Length: 472
Ligand code: NAD
Image 1 (cartoon, protein in one colour):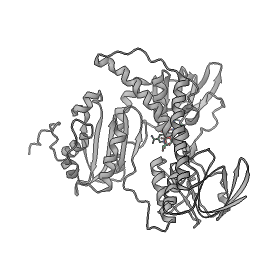
Image 2 (image 1 turned 90 degrees about the vertical axis):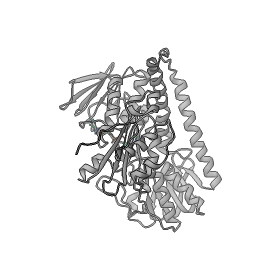
Image 3 (image 1 turned 180 degrees about the horizontal axis):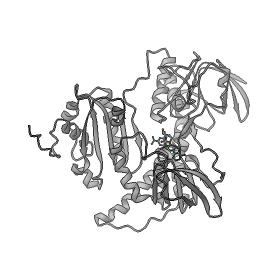
Image 4 (image 1 turned 135 degrees about the horizontal axis):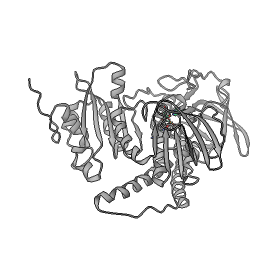
């Protein structure tokens, strides 16, 4: 069998389906190929969506516990793992089936199968019913990434989980060792801790979430210290051995407070790698960089004129919303529009409780670049809304150019940070000045006021924070 299409898209995650839908909306004939029965990719099937469902449950459990401080006491949660799994699966099903329906409505040809490049204008797609050739004018590679594994540490066991198997929630283990204190380690560690597992984290660098501003991470670390049995920084695992009761891990490094530990399960969350193997890229001129990412230009075009690449496969940050934006740029470029991927701010959110979110220039990046910036902070202890929510330990900060007073970056640690960072993205993208935020009336009482008050603090005039004037 064979078919021909104007645009073939390989990978139906947020990068691939966003590209497919816009290309179809722009009048192009589109074929979207994925191994799953519907679009969705890692984000919907095994990543963002199922993890956020479980993190919501973790938050509810956490708040129910915290309610004791407010005079309301609930009993210990009774967790029906089958029902929880079913609820999570239902959400994923609804969303992915909805995407399948959107494909049909837009007349995007969805092919369930595995695609390999035969050359720069054709794919060979293996489906359940056989093999077919898909000839294309343009292709967009959007195959995403997969969990990185550790070098062989001695144990190969179903007790060793990655993000996919941990999200499947096979059971609630009595104890869990999380290797890697990044996004996945802290999000999934938080889920299991809330469900009752004794969680220990081992992180190779000197702090959780390396690269993120320390004042933001501190807000989370303080809470995690209460929730996790142990957090070992500057420590790595040198060996894993399976024993009848679990996995014995041996630790090394300045921060290894214990020499070894036995846990029922181990979660490896040490990063993700771009998925470029087995795609037949050797049959094209698509080139990879030293880290294995596909090299692309500002329109996401690879070294092969007919092939574009978007999402995790084309570089950091490996985030669904960056992939979707790139996918739309590639679709526009194919449709002949003048377009380029040039965001001023890509937001990042760690969906722990509290959440951490940032966008644009961070304080750490400014330091590395030896760039002169002014940091304006608003501590949530001064926010009425934060106190009513029991979240007085949050902070909102602005990274401001002292000359132009332009907002270069925003960081937030606290409940709802992931929702609020969008205002920061808009401020950075629109080249807003501190006065723009300060003069925009924010609703009271909300956490969003913290952005306005941080801008007020830049001028020394935050209503709810008193800073005595400097004596001259
Ligand atoms: P990550 O890069 O965020 O964190 C990996 C951590 O593992 C780092 O802190 C690193 O120092 C540590 N590490 C590496 N090797 C180690 C070792 N041998 N022993 C101990 N620690 C070690 O990676 P991740 O958490 O696996 O997530 C992968 C990617 O998935 C992220 O970069 C992110 O782009 C994406 N993601 C995003 C979200 C979100 O947006 N909320 C959630 C989950 C995943």
